Image (cartoon, rainbow, N blue to C red; front, side, top):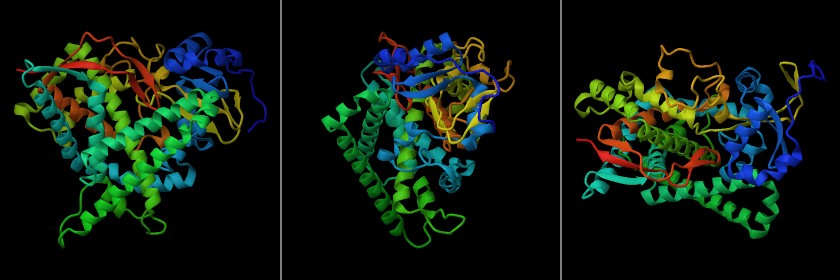
Length: 467
């Protein structure tokens, strides 16, 4: 590995004074400002996050593939992710190296296809519960109701992942409390990253201590769920099958090298990560999918026609049925292209490297701008147009290589990607076969890019009962 660049191809540099002077504006609209920077400087630029931390921001698919896949051993999550250790612990999202690989191998079987077959019924039950809530709200309102779709989808997605993990070990009120705590911790942490110069003020106000206390309460409630789950399993009569959920799978799992189970502290860390990643991404993807379907009724009706043709008479979809309704998957995929839940990915070089003649020094921080990648006009024809058909098997042009990364890429591809795609399709199918989703007079929401890409404020939609 050369100590110096092999060619003078340094990426453009955005002056520190410029990023610092615009840091407040960037904190308010990071997506819009990153789009402007890349439009002005090119697909890869050097800048200062918050006007303080040097970082390379890129929407170049070849560079992303180099970092995430081809040379992934030289790149780890950066301090931007590792800072979550303080609140969520050392789970798959925040772990590294051999320890991460050991955990990944232990957890991966919980998301295999045979496991999803059993979890599909639970996902469908949660979707049907949401549809029943719509019916109750519609009573006496002429068959339609207007609501905040993001708040509703957050409840649905959290119910699905929490029940998939804990079964009945936690009450609805406790699940709501978990969701609220996780949201508060996420919001505070992202604020400290985007505006690092405010950290002394946070210390003076005691904000760090307050959120540390929330993290402790979160862990204690998760421990209670584990304890109740174990007690319920121990009380089963001889020969009775244990609960078929992810927590039971993790309790039963044993490391290949030692034959030992996971320690409880590690189990709590992994459950925290599963809860955060499992409901955040799905809630946002569902919200944006319904938003896009409301704005494109022709797409919505095409999806409903496919469901009625392949699953007639209200037939409840099982996991093996989903390949028969591919348009539902294409709608989900296109929604996650336009609004990728994981809108940016961080990495740091753990040793010197080189990419296309550009020297990369050890310690270089990269922000892989997935939103910019998914909206890149050079990669996606009519990049701003909602067109699910582009994901059909026979579609032309084919998907760009490493141009679509809603779940990341390489060995650290999200372990729950198939889980998420399954629940997203099920919620869309069970909702749209009973309700038509329509836009409202409310102003279209902006973007609120925290760790995941949320709408900024309420996203109000109308759900109208089908005849």
